[in-house]
Length: 343
Image 1 (tube, helix red, strand yellow):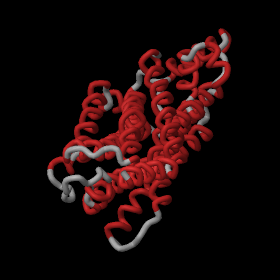
Image 2 (cartoon, helix red, strand yellow):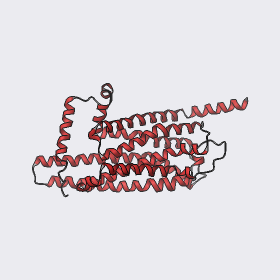
Image 3 (cartoon, one colour):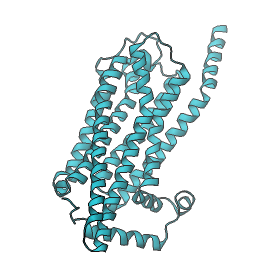
Image 4 (tube, one colour):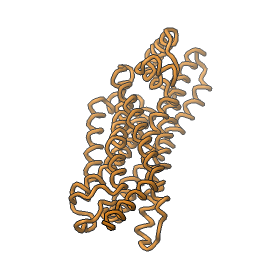
């Protein structure tokens, strides 16, 4: 009787202590699912958004939806200590977040490569970057992510004594998290993306200077400069997405590195929970970046949302605005095939 009462009191204390964490995680999950679902609906329902770049962003949004709908609920259950299950069920709950994280990082690398080809090799873009090639790359990123994230299911994990709670640190190997996930699958793609975006920004800067020096018709120069400015804004937006990914995921990887290098070091539980929440928050940030940085997504979401919600969140769409948007897109289409200077 006393033991039962004491266990109930301990369980209640754990839940009370974790109320801020639970509320934050639930809100993050809701915003991740709702925001990324709107992004997916915008791409699917708007034909003008069905570009190769947006196919990769659609894959990234899908991974973020899974984080909010699957990974975060699993993390909440594990933190509450209610998941005393079999070894493989526990490993599956622990590994799904790593799978979606790898899908995100590989997808971001694919976007960077696609943007690099678009800026540096514009005449070869339509040949190299086709919708079919994009679908194959997206499929490859998900297969690679699943293989990498589910390695613990193949045997690389700590012993799981019967009756032990399903906890991340007691079952997932720190060596796997550091050597395979962080040093093997996170750092190299991030370094590659930084190099690619650096080359992209330098090339766009060079093209803008050349356009200013061209002795051609003023209207043609203005149009070409508008195209380059649009590419610069797109590249900047995608770089912000990469920066947010690094900012949100780096703390948890640094904690894994500390656990591997210094097993006796005690990291406060509050620090661990903050790092976990920050890694989950990344899934809710991308839709915000798309809406505030990319007009095409903002207009598509305005058209997708009900009229009342659109007026309260991102503004109402009027007939004149749609006419201007259509006119601008038609103008861009008419000069899209004009080669950029220096090419």
